[in-house]
Length: 382
Image 1 (cartoon, rainbow, N blue to C red):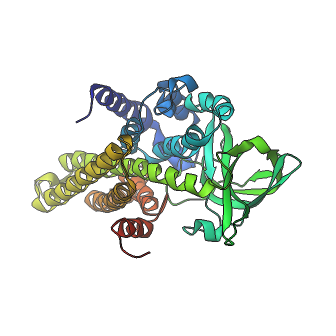
Image 2: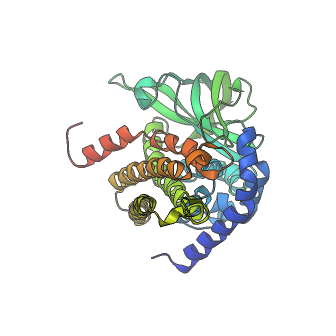
Image 3: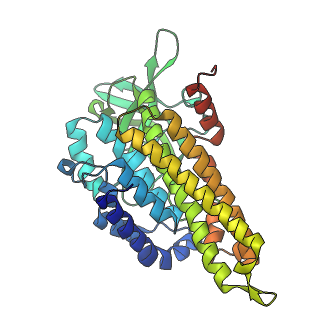
């Protein structure tokens, strides 16, 4: 059961998504343009500060509140939802969890207000899911500064006009066993030697910002180290466990949006002399879609409950991510089929939903990685 605050939040974000986002987002999507005005309004609502303590300019809520907001936004559009998810889960939460008070004071108030976006530079062009094995970016201390060299790929929110800082995972040495020592270093936008590429041309999430980053003798102060040296990989694992719950919520939103749009359409469209919603084949399809969304929602609720209670939730987060991304993909396919030719048109939301759904089976841990995590948590050999 949602408490009163969560119910009110969900309702307010639902109204915002329907009244502010829905009428204009299709145009942003077609132009592959970042929706600065929508982001500004989200900031004014406090959405970027939902799980951030009030002392750092946030709303003082919990991570589940963020998940509820993501679900409601994604019922209308995933580009807006992933902008919020990445800004908070990958940009703000590592600073909140591992940063010094000075780092928190410098970055979190403006990030919580939506005035500045943060990003997390982890994935590399040749790495993919093999983060430690594929990492080539290095950072070496020289005269009280970190000198960073390397590149990152598929980094969300990294090149907008309001991007302020990127947490960069880099190899800062080698352990006795020869394995890389990975640390996270905060690199402000505009730092010499830090180059942001042009936006990717993407299949989906067309109104969000995703870019490749490169670092060539990029220097930042030694105090820009985030958390303990050599703990970057452990930080990343914790960040992704939390982020998977958030991505699951976003996936549920897309899955539910497919149900919403399909119900509206079958009540309006007529074929062979009657509303197509009277045909049992379509009724069964929509019933299956609703069952998937409902089941996936329960999965992410359960993972969030364990996380907030301080209980282990790695397996539950992986299950939620796996089940909900499957639901999003399956529902998007079925909704497109229900809409027929109109489902193939970008002017209809289900066309965007279909394009947006696939990345949910890839980003923040592929479906294969989720299955691997679940198997390991069950005690099966690595």
